[in-house]
Length: 375
Image (cartoon, rainbow, N blue to C red; front, side, top):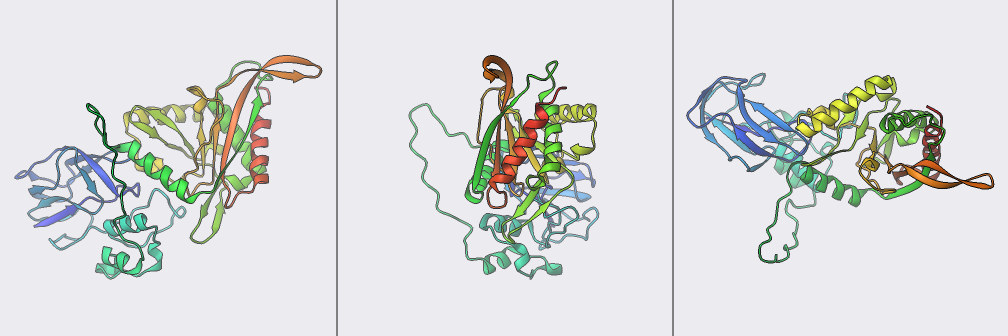
């Protein structure tokens, strides 16, 4: 009998929630037919049948959260598509790219998903050790033996609830947000600088998102330090010529952050279509994992809802995020008189480990200069 374990589905996450099984115990199945739909932190993924054979056991029901690398389903026998035959003792080896990639084309160490999840939990670099598993794969014992931490940390007891109230577990995007924000707060020495862009020179109201993207493209040419990644382990950074922009999309399920690739090479009409497509996919939870990672800069246009200034949170390895508040009429001094001008409040947060205050201010000044140009 072979056991198929939940693979890393391309987002570098430690778990997924079972939404619906498409097969059951006793079913005769063919490779590549739909097997189970699972919800990761950012998207819904359909996992196909890896074996041609008979289903022996399902490990988990709809609503259960399964750890990456944990048993998912048992089969009588068969061959994994594109892989060597799996025995009862075999393990699924995770070779995919994580949500936080070291760079385009970079290859991660061979590691079992449970070992990779443990390393993330302990903030342990897998490149520091060699694997003792089959083919040199890093196992859970390798990680625990080489690290100083433990898998289980003390958890504060939940407060007692009043009658009629109940705890609601955070799932999907909300669970991912809780983790990434906690990790960011623990790691990033955040600083934020704020200012306003005067839009009075615009001859007609424009598409704020498109103008913001144009401004980010121009600002990168003037101050490239903010379109970058920083690696705390090696205390090094990489600056990018291209801009892969992560945009925050508010959905009923929580915040989802799809990525627009190479925005510096796209015409306004192309960017507008790309934004619309990613927003629609975010609401439908159909964004592929590769469109949720490896961003070089972040943008939050929260002013479409409400809010003047904010403190946007940087998600590593990116080093900066620009927040745009609600455009409104302000009283401004024009010579010796006072006039009403449309102004956009801006909040630029940055990782102060690798970005200086001067670099951040020059970048923000470049964004403002571009926004203040006529249409």
